[in-house]
Image (tube, rainbow, N blue to C red):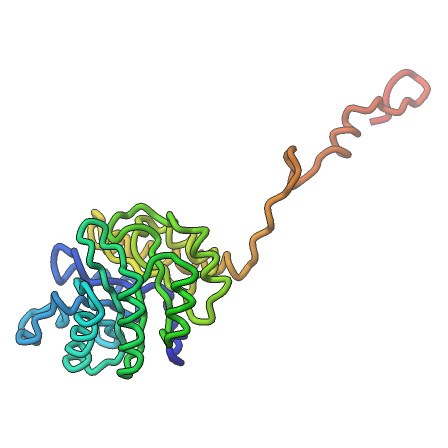
Amino acid sequence: MIAGRPYRSRLLVGTGKFAAHEVMRDSLLASGAEIVTVALRRVDLDRAGEGDVLDFVPPGMTLLPNTSGAVDAAEALRLARLGRAATGTGLVKLEVTPDPRTLAPDPIETLRAAELMVADGFTVLPYCSADPVLARRLEEAGCATVMPLGSWIGSNRGLRTRDAIEAIVAAAGVPVIVDAGLGVPSDAAEAMEIGAAAVLVNTAIAVAADPVRMARAFALATVAGRLGHLAGQAGPGTATAASASSPLTGFLGALGAPAKGNGNGRGTG
């Protein structure tokens, strides 16, 4: 549930790095995603209808313009406004990443941009570091979700920030969407198992040998992880020895016991 609107799929997918727009389209369909992120810097609004990336987003999918490439709050707000004017949506994925080496989100400028965007009527989904304090501040600023990173953008290194994300989930009053760094479907399942509301995946799907099949795998992993979370994981034990799930002590003991005799030295079995 994002800003009062329900979504069936808990997998969000990006549109960057695909070898061809047709592959992107087929992967989006295979993912079952309902929300698709589009970097405003990659969209040529003057070529709409002439083969631009937006022309290959399947009908019915919710566009989530993002401010990828913005280096401060002012630039992020400008990009968001351009995206709203072009697409008609007030949804925006807020990204402020001034460091080109790590693409780490700037916490100060991200919070500042979130405050400006919320005041301007946007529904803000901010990409942020896995910082429980920052996540709380973004929620207090009026963001519809928080989107902590699993690891560096595009690194495919998995859920390196698990402990911090668990703390964010425990305290959040808005959906927590794990964004960036998830490399294989099991990473998505792990994020869902610890209580994330959704995950956003781009690079791991786009650069896979078979992006369409990988998109489907991530979709299934997201469902499995969510079911695992709802089922409730048994807490880890404290014993130092193993505990068999099907104890055979009584049965094996009976097999090893002397047979009852019948008086002639032979057992009765």
